[in-house]
Length: 149
Image 1 (cartoon, one colour):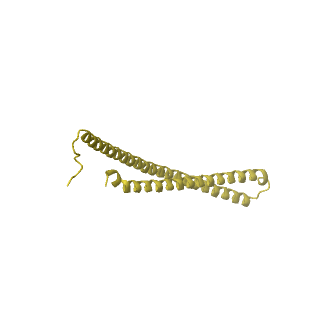
Image 2: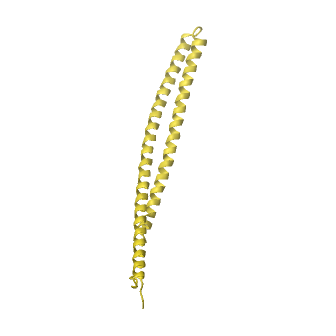
Image 3: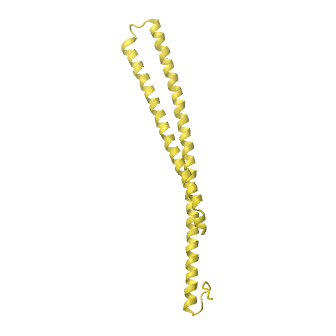
């Protein structure tokens, strides 16, 4: 078996790992986008709530209602902070997955280069052997690779 052929299983394993890393990268990208979307929704909701309060409720609001409003706004702000942390975590996971994919891709390329080099060596070896056989035939000598009984 040729050296290039012996590396085929290793190349396939590396390619599978690269595909898995690419899938994980896609999933991390989707998770980040979802977290960013949720953060944007929370911020929009808070802005709308504040605007509604200023336009509708500031004038005839009791102290209890004002306290409830502030409490709700505080909870909403905490939810936004927590979601912002989730966005940061998702961005960090995405970068980690990107690096893992990049590493796997590099391994596949490196193995591909090694296989290509082995194949080129194998082709040159075959070409040298064929040239040697042709030279021997043209000089009338029997080929070293032929066996006569």
